[in-house]
Image 1 (cartoon, rainbow, N blue to C red):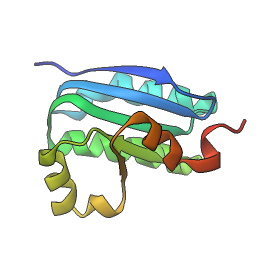
Image 2 (tube, rainbow, N blue to C red; image 1 turned 90 degrees about the vertical axis):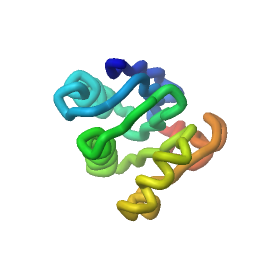
Image 3 (cartoon, helix red, strand yellow; image 1 turned 45 degrees about the vertical axis):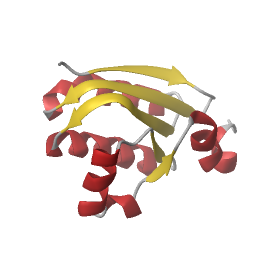
Image 4 (tube, rainbow, N blue to C red; image 1 turned 180 degrees about the vertical axis):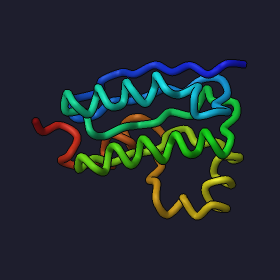
Length: 121
């Protein structure tokens, strides 16, 4: 199964990214990282990464997620992971990234996790 994604602007500062398929190699996410850069340039510095439809994430894919976090935080934003599977939770725990990423069960909780940094211009 190939990798695809959909970006939806939730507010002027927040974009959600629905990840689908399998993210195996960094080159598969080149367009995604370019689109994240474009979002940051327009002011959307906070990202919600929705894993509900992602079937597999390799270590290279995890690097892509970290690249999104770096781009976001470099611009005073943050990243929240949503619909995290048990397998991904385990991976985050093993790599200790569970201390780096916030997680949310649904979109409302994800948006609330940004606090005032989700709606201001």
